[in-house]
Length: 483
Ligand SMILES: Nc1ncnc2c1ncn2[C@@H]1O[C@H](COP(=O)(O)OP(=O)(O)OP(=O)(O)O)[C@@H](O)[C@H]1O
Image 1 (cartoon, protein in one colour):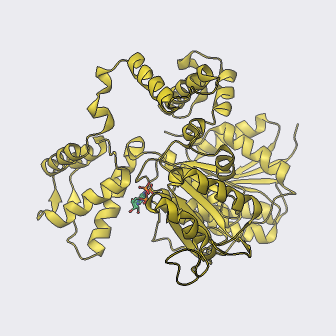
Image 2: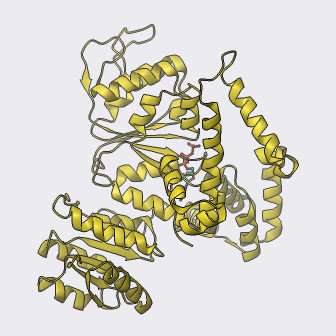
Image 3: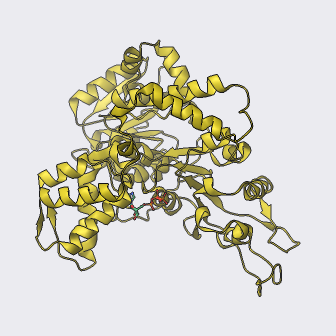
């Protein structure tokens, strides 16, 4: 028996019962209510060791209760559950001192684990900042699909830290937006946010761009110039397209990160760094490490907290909200307000969006500017998408998957792998490395198909549940839960 008391406030009686039962089975004492007033009474009477509360309670929004609880009983861990799955709810809950935020629907096992964690970390937990700085009206990132909620949860948990983050995701998935959100909601938000795209800087200028140069350091250096590291002092430096950084510059960057100081080109005195690094790449950096194109030690230094942004086609359910968002944005810029018919929306949801949100944003802008009608119908969308497909044929439409057997595509992959090593042979261990590359998508896609249900995934794959868990850990697969 654990003996601790868990206070639960949830107005949905089915969820209340499920949660209460699960916790009682773990040996906790449970007190459950449907209203905020009863919860507050228990807390002010000194009852309870952990609080689990829904956000929208009938008599009060529990996020408003959080600061009062924190003032009265700062050590009492609070776990917030919510169906309002926006970045703001996640951030608000965390900012107001919630120990954990669980978007609904959640796996009951993760709630029990959160309760256990909250009890064991109770004494060591640092107080989260409680100030408020975001208006309800401006949501910086649109989308409430389960993979986006997982992203919000990670961002929210990082608000009080300076940890280095590595964002992966196809082009146009919102990597820069997430980097900005990490800055805007983080503890360095008063400092500058400086973004630098490694792919856009000529190789020979990278060092002076990042670290600055002294007057006369090279031909053309007429005056001293501060580099991006110096400009982002006190704030966040966003290193976009880090996979495009040449190897020599990677070595230099690694040294700076290790030593916490840098010397401008042509300078003698080191300057201390005081910034948070967020890096991003649309390339598979792990693969680049294996191919010897990206330094492994730098990868691990950057990959402290990995965030993988889903492609838009993996979260088509967010498309209507995004379309709405971009239409109102266009309207805000003086263009006529338009709507999209349900059939047209279905077409948009079915497209594969190789350019992701950026491509969708551009298309909506075109619709707002070019079409006279107020309501955009299916024909317009079909013709726009046909045109888009003709301009940017997707990789798999050049060689349709159906025309290429699995075996042939693996052969192509293996050939490419050998070619990447030019005349030399790859280092030993090719068999396991290739198998891992097959295993990773196989497991990740099966988990996506079972919506994160590991039992079902193990069953479908025909492997033991513990084997699957081990593989998920070994292969560093992010499991998304939810419908
Ligand atoms: N979830 C989202 N909600 C609203 N706007 C979004 C979202 N994701 C992306 N966008 C918009 O799409 C465009 C592309 O986003 P962003 O530049 O952050 O992508 P990226 O992944 O950094 O792209 P790249 O890899 O090409 O640099 C931006 O205009 C951004 O505002």
